[in-house]
Structures are given as C-alpha cells and as structure tokens.
Amino acid sequence: MPRGLVREILLLLCLALLPALGQAVYFRDRISWRQPAKQDEITVSQARNLTGPVMWLDARPEEEFAAGHIPGAKLLNAEHWDNLLPQVLNAWTPDQKLIVYCSKQSCDASHEVARRLREEANLKNVFVLAGGWEAWQESAK
Image 1 (cartoon, rainbow, N blue to C red):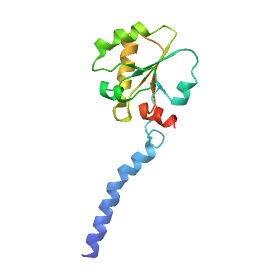
Image 2 (image 1 turned 90 degrees about the vertical axis):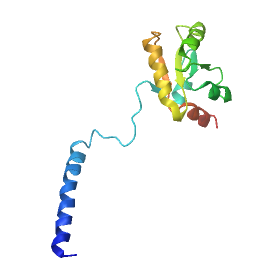
Image 3 (image 1 turned 180 degrees about the vertical axis):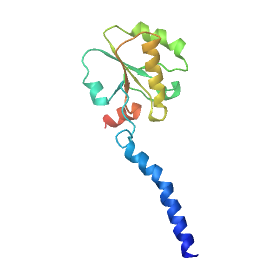
Image 4 (image 1 turned 30 degrees about the vertical axis):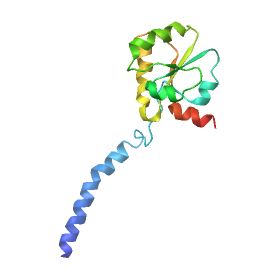
C-alpha cells in the first residue's frame, strides 16, 4: 500500500474521531454510564427501615406471583388492573406506604403500576422496589 494512501486513511480516521471527542468533552458531566436511580425507587434496606404500615404490591404476571412473592404481597399488575385494583383498595389504609415490585426482566411494569396508583387512584406514598423480586431474594440470603 502506498505511503501517501496510508497517511490519507489515518487523517480521515482522525477527522472522523474529532466530533466524538468534542461531544465527550462537552457532555462529560451529563453522561452517565450506569442508569440513574429513578426518583420513586427504594432499596430493600430502605423499605425494611420504613416506619408504619407497608403494603407490598407485586406487578409481575400471575404465574410468577404464584411461584413466589414477598410475604403478604398482593398481586396488582397492569394486565388485570381493573379486576385487581378494587381488592387492593379494600385492603389499603391511608397511612400505608405502597411498595410495588416486579422482576429485573419486567421492572418497567412496577413503574407503570406505581404511576397508575398515583395518577388514577390518587394514592400517595407509592414507591418502586429497586432491583425487584430478585433484590428481595438476594437480601434474604
């Protein structure tokens, strides 16, 4: 390969990298390589340290709930929202904190259920368990 061609290729590669380097410098304080914790999330240890009554809500599919869940948890998922919400509201008291969880694979489901509890049912003190069911199981070891 001619020396001039190699030089041109290297020059083009360097020029192609300039915008990426500029962006990295400009956004250095705004880019996070890990997902930030969402505002409504609570860790297992924080949940265990809450004072007052707590109601656990499992946002996973019914089959996963039946296979295992946090003791005393009630099933409330988006799929059967209309059927399950009245049961939850009948068991809920205004002083209770609600902690919604799911599994790592479907943890957007817990955020969706928490959002609906806040917006559609007008409930306060609704949290999402960070790490979901797996975080709970890991903490029990």
